[in-house]
Image (cartoon, rainbow, N blue to C red; front, side, top):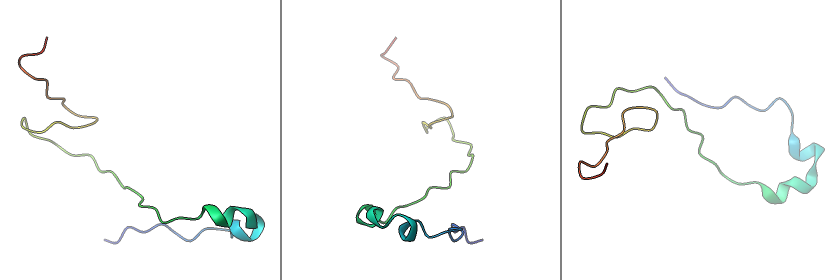
Amino acid sequence: MSRTTPPRPLDVEALFPELATYRGTITRLHPRPGRPDVAASSVGGPLLWPTDEP
């Protein structure tokens, strides 16, 4: 399954040409829920804590 961003409904640069100088390439993340095991620390999931820390 290909995950792509749909085309924009309007051309922002045509409406605001001064914004064209700020254009850049980005990477859009598509996070998916996971099930990390006990050896993995995960944002939004179980957090591993060092054994020598209170």
